[in-house]
Image (tube, rainbow, N blue to C red; front, side, top):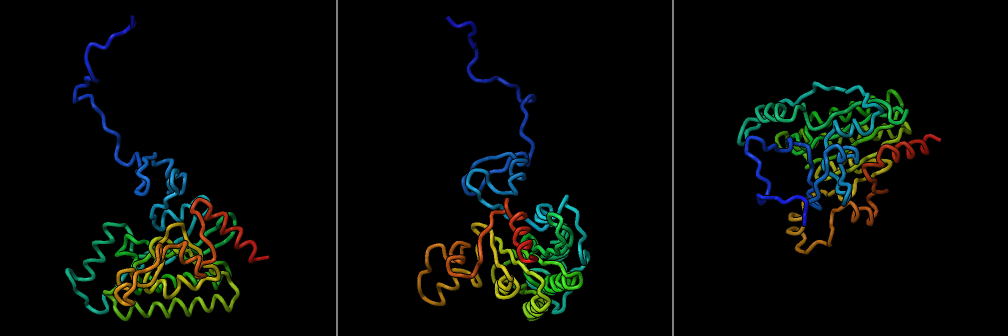
Length: 281
């Protein structure tokens, strides 16, 4: 005989006493579908504790992960795009830029800053895919060039974190000029024997891949990152053949010699510190 007997089946809770979990309290991994607490997700550097899926993050998250105590000084924080071509598609280009600024809180698709990483001075430029697909326009090229100039002036390593869909069509030729501008500045870094590390994240494509993203003294990538120039569909239609399995994945690119190594985001800060420490000996 049981001591207690439930008379009513199920839990009878009046609607006014029901409480829902606050928005943003849980994160569901898009890969394995496991739900984890957002605090745990953050502690794991925005990677899944179950399958190690690397969630796409922005410049602020990388700055928090890399700079000691999140202390850094941002460079050219207020620089924003002009409209050199008076470009119009479904809306005027300046209107699109303003709308994206309001939506994202960003001024353009890259932010640059300097600070210390495990006590080591470093300049970092990180791209934001949320700003018009991380597209490379005049501001992106100019801010990266100025960040490189800062590294040259202060003789400290430069880290470029790329995430982009390629050149910004609203700026046409002006956008493509940024490939040459940034590549020329990186050549000055090379002449000065100042280390340049390029981190490719998901996705890194188009003119960004064809310029500064693949010119590092060390080219590294996050697990699962898509890396390429044109999209798989365009390549398939051009060559008329099926593409290899896993084509344009970080693992595939590594196997074919275009990357030096793949680094887990949780280990990124320590790996970069060790690598730069070896280069300075």
